[in-house]
Length: 69
Image 1: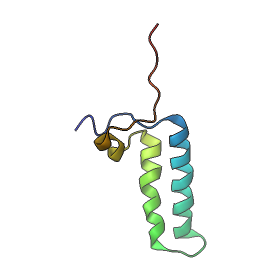
Image 2: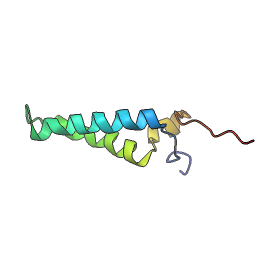
Image 3: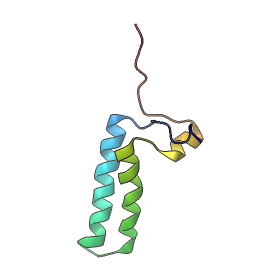
Image 4: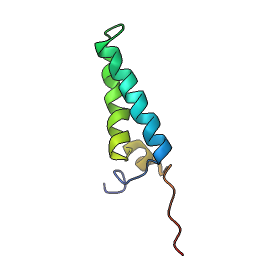
């Protein structure tokens, strides 16, 4: 379970997720007032915490590994 919630989202991916999350949530309060905008909570939360459970299950990581000297 620890591997699924590992820190596996890189900085650019995090920024994109947060922006996308806010944009989708805006659909709930502004514009068409569609409940589908609540889906924006998923990219928003994963962007804020830096962990994506789907990435963990698939073994994907967009975070760079720091090189040791």
